[in-house]
Length: 482
Image 1 (tube, rainbow, N blue to C red):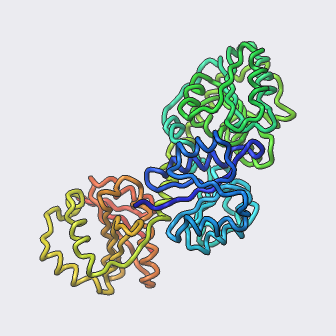
Image 2: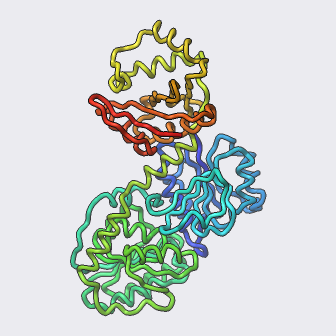
Image 3: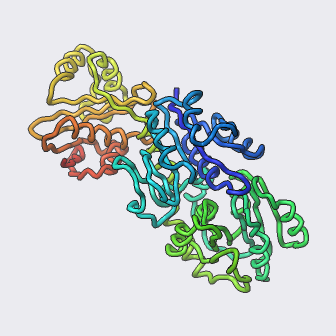
């Protein structure tokens, strides 16, 4: 049974679909590792279908349930204290968050305005240039800020890992997200069409666009314009790949453009786009389109090839396509529970120790006999100079960390169950174990790990946690003072 993640966001033609789109991107990052339920109020039928195609389950909060009673409603029918709750929306303020935390749930907030106090265990804001000092938060809160935590759909993350070169600019992509509530795309497209070198303008409208009929009628009178709507990520990428230039607001769509490698004109039209807009311009990820309601001028000429190439270089430097893996690690860390090992865990440790890959990566590669293991384990499990920690997800043991403490040095031995390797839990597992050791063992101590050169994954875990390394003929010694 997988740990449950409940993702709460709203979206419609008035407020747009930004919260829902990025929250669904998170679901796509997590759904192979967690059971993901999406919680929403009053979705359109199109949006409901979109959510059901991605999330494992959909909960629609009844209209009669007031926002202040919403957590109680969810708790009565769905939530348990072992679940992770994700909130994406400006109406989930401190009182709402406290209701979630009081249930014992882990709490994640997706936020881009830092306008109130947060009780979250994790805050994700993928806008660049945001210092964590802007956030009022608890001491325990982990911050995941900037494009390295970009909430993009997997096809866009994959596209970001492919290199793209500057090409002659012929086709322009325009998208203002799921709603375009101010119907700005026709005027923007008209400005682009002033450039005679542009052969085709491709406009994509989202499922919440109330002006679709007007947009389609306008496009029929412009032979260089083609309008699409309600597209999948794969279809979006196919269209975007046929373009060289894009015009988009400072929102998730601008990050999708950057991940694909298009020369981007980025602008804004609502206040919550300010930080992302200034970041994209200052980091030379985009050219400024200013305020779309007042200042996007007719495009009479195209940017130079040098400008185009420079923008692409910046985009490929910052958008590496690995944000899904980084975010997944943070959620796996939230899901991990640590406990002391017990005498009854002897067989579990024996099976882990004798697993072929574990033996291969050990300094002593010979198989361990059961009788020898029992004697070794019983002699150490209750000693003060050893610490045995077991990690579980949903009550299932997924790995262990052991510390052998001698003369002020704690030597690490750790292993991950073969069913849970390759999903990124090594670093959070070891980090939690080290923090627990600091709590249990208050004296000054040096923490060391011995890793064979062939064990590349373990070496990476130690490096990620800031260990210093010393190379020996047959192994690398990693050290960390505390």
